[in-house]
Amino acid sequence: MKTNLESTLNNIQNALDNSDIDLAQQLLNTLHPADQADAISDRTLQEQSKMLPHLTADNAAAVLEHLDEDEAANIASELPLDILANLLDKMEPDEAADILLDLYEDKASQVLKQMSSSEIILPLLKHRDDTAGGRMTTQIPTLYPEMTTSHCITYLRKSKPDKEHHYYLYVIDQNNTLLGILGLRELITNPPNTQIKDIMNNDFISASVDDDQEKCARLISHYNLMSLPIVNDQTQLLGVITYDDIVEVIEDEATEDIYALSNLSADSDLDVFSPVKMMISKRLPWLYVNLFGAFISAYVISKFEPTIAKIAFLAIFQSIVAGLGGNAGTQSLAIMVRALALKQLTFRQVWKALGRELVIGSLNGLAVGISCAILVYFWRGNTALGLIIGIATFGNLLIAGLLGTIIPLTLKYFRQDPALASSALVTGITDIIGFALFLSLATLYISYL
Image (cartoon, rainbow, N blue to C red; front, side):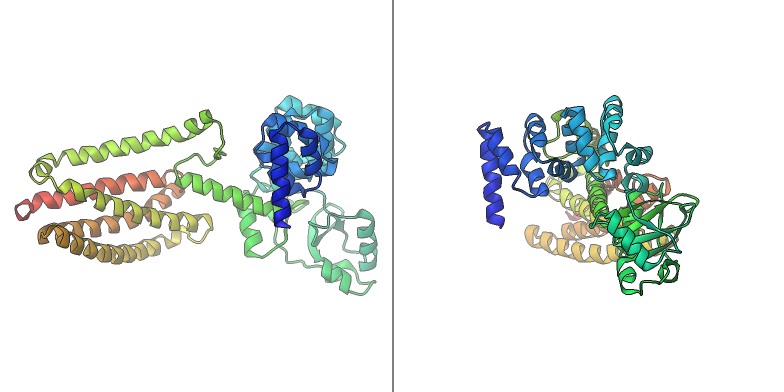
């Protein structure tokens, strides 16, 4: 199966390279929508917008759902209004809303006028797409507590809910207030005359419509849910977030944290083929921040110029101390940012976390410091130089571990993203401290060197 897929994808690429759009379209229609999305994702926008309308309407809509959000919006912007309206009608409401939010306002308004599902999608456009309201789907079957299981099964057969989404059924009253949740298993296995209120689960987990998508992901993961009901302040049911939406959330949040730890804007949406102008605008500012830190490090080194002038080989070893400190700080930082992101750490536990990092930094510093001292002694044959590097390494690793804990906690306290600036700060400060420690000790004990 995998070989056939790869062969088909290669044939599609060859057809497109030879400008044989008809053959490419025929081959595309034989693939699963996810594979169709892979096949056209690296083609030009012009080719994508030509191919998509020639797929079956259901497949074309599914392809848009499988494509990256920005890429789907770019293709949508090139499609004629009537074709785009038809495709969005066939998509999940939350996916269609995401595309509409990324379109220019006047085109989005024109498309909505031609859509038959506009009444369903309009409420979703009121919410940011990184909130529960922006992620939820509103097409869900609801039950009333007085209904019997037999009545409910008949209702579900007629309404034909999406088989991929509705493992849970939601029980509401006349005001649309969420009263309980019922699993399909409980519905099928109970006697036909059983009332829903007698078998529904009143102790349910829900999220507010304004909650951040990351909180919803944590709830679904922590309670092992297949879907999460979304309610307003009056506990009225507005929609649900399903497990497949959460997979996208996890990917988005992971990308955000990876970019932030690399000193890239968390909302930059960069990928390997992003426009050069966008790449530079998002990456260059942080390089200037690092440049500023590098100049401070250079200034610190310059203060010890007489020492280095007398003993030139010190320049060989100073980067070892600074580099080890930077790596130790990044390790501590990564663990701390993850703990904050997953709510594993609260401000009440700060002192406990600092105490643990103090112990870990001391032990790591001692182990690496001793190793450095021994290696330098066998290399240069100078006991004093080995001890100086060992002590400087110990001190820098200890401080680096503490900084990797304190800096993200401080940023979190001031309601800033703990990942965004932590890496630049930790690396810059540990470099400065590493150079200062090593060269200060070397200056103090220069007579032994």
